[in-house]
Amino acid sequence: MNSFIETFSTRRGELLQTLIEHIQISFISLLIAVIIGVPLGILLTKTDKFAEVVINIAAVMQTIPSLALLGLMIPLFGIGEFPAIIALVIYALLPVLRNTYTGIKEVDPSLVEAAEGIGMKPLRRLVKVEIPIAMPVMMAGIRTAMVLIIGTATLAALIGAGGLGDLILLGINRNNTDLIILGAIPAALLAILFDIGLRLIQNMSYRRAVITVVSMFVVILAIALAPLLTNRGGEITIAGKLGSEPAIITNMYKILIEEETDYTVKVEDGLGQTSFLFNALKSDEIDGYLEFTGTVLGELVKEPAESNKESEVYDQAVDALESGLDMTMLEPMKFNNTYTLAVKKDFAEENNLETIEDLKSVEDEIRPGFTMEFNDRQEDGYPAVSEAYGLNFSDVVTMEPQLRYQAIESGEINLVDAYATDAELRQFDMVILEDTKRVFPPYQGAPMFKQEFLEEHPEIIDPLNKLSGKITDEEMQDMNYRVTVEDELPNDVAREYLEENNLIE
Image (cartoon, rainbow, N blue to C red):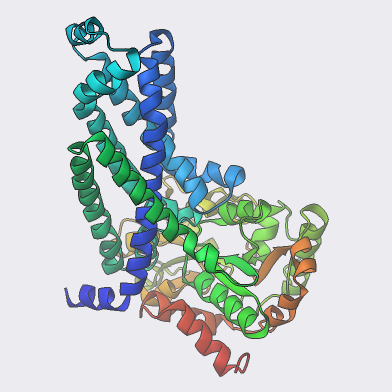
């Protein structure tokens, strides 16, 4: 309890910001779903021929996994609140549409006939008789939609939409239960408060209900637009993948650019895996992000590394980016955050494991847990390791990056893919198995941008290149440890490194 109170005290400002973002996204999504779903549901009661088709289409849309739907939004609409709201409206539309249709259809026909008998026209009959009677069923659908929206909105953090999901994902990433609870409890309370609010609106007159909803929409929209209206000068958006390392490095980029130019930098942290960031850069939703030379070759341009020398791999990656994608990387840092395979120290000592090749002797005992990205990467992932070393593990479990360390600590798995600078290697007393066949190419980190963007913003090149050849493997692992295990803020760790190495005043 004490650690949770300390986490709450430290992150009060962040909690308030993410709560406001979550309310914005949820309320706007719900309002749009109601604006679309209610009139459409009413219209379908007059055209039974199309009702089943339309409702079935809405049902099919809701069966799309939320993570897949969010991923599909990036190439279509980019990242941020807009694609998140589109995805949430799609999820919320079915209960609003179906309950509106059902509520209106179930109104007692004798009441409709009585209204017609006293001369009510269709619109007046709808407003005065059918909707009031159907309102409990309609509101049940709206409340269901509200619960779906608030719950799914936590995943919207994966595409830079913000909200309480930022805290939850950060907690998962750092194996910090307090952060997960700090994001989850307000989300649950928010669902309860929204439900109370909807009940109050249900009991209001039409006039008061409309005025209340419109007023809330204006206030939330004003809060959402305030940062845009107060923004001064140019803003550059630099994003990072999940993990402490991208968070630290992107904050270094932010500090360096803001110290030496007139630009302000917005950091979009924890945007997910490589494909998310790459698609966001292609669609101009972000301006740049931290990428690694080996990832460029193995994942983005699908070229085998022609050398194991770091400088030659960097040159090959840059050539491929510039010639095929109109992108480029600035000068790389020193540390080599290459893929590795790792086991617990006691398991390595018990089975005399020092290299990846040694796993062959205990192949039947290995229970691997790999990230989905590593398990699928043909050039430098598990398929390449399997081919080079003749390994064929029978039961590979795939999971999110940070979950695999929890799984190996609990004994569910005994082999993981890792990065050479992971803090968890030190935290969980892990041993890296030597890659004697050099399956994994060098992975030096560098900022990646579109060439056109750098031509338009040449002032940022020199500040970012100050990190060229800087940060050793040991320094990076130590900074990761401070953020992941000791819960220091990435920006504080980044600034301290830059100051200690005289990169900023």
